[in-house]
Image (cartoon, rainbow, N blue to C red; front, side, top):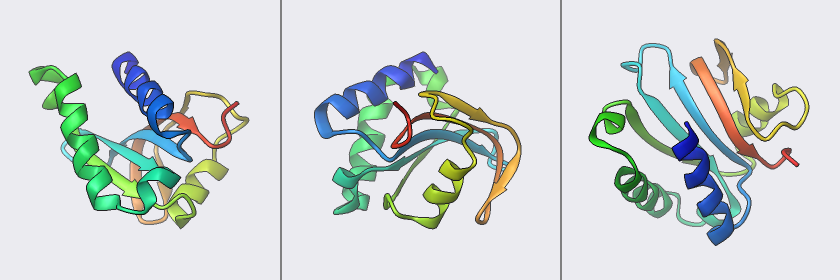
Length: 120
């Protein structure tokens, strides 16, 4: 977890604050964590941003950590999923954890929002 907080911090310094940077483990997704990113700098080329983030992230992770990694999803900052997920965050903590919930069509077993546009 701390490694991904440092990774997000570097991304923010280089590209600007994201609207959402979260780790989400879905129900039935082989118990792997996915990175969900919504950021203005990624919205113009979400596929390119996803490929770049996957490549960078894999270089940060150990082989054991990679087995727990399920990929990267890049969304628009105004995506309905992003807005609904952020509406569920109480307060504006920098790191916020959510337990099992359904957001849009995503059945979330656990989510850790590392940074969001609401965080101070």
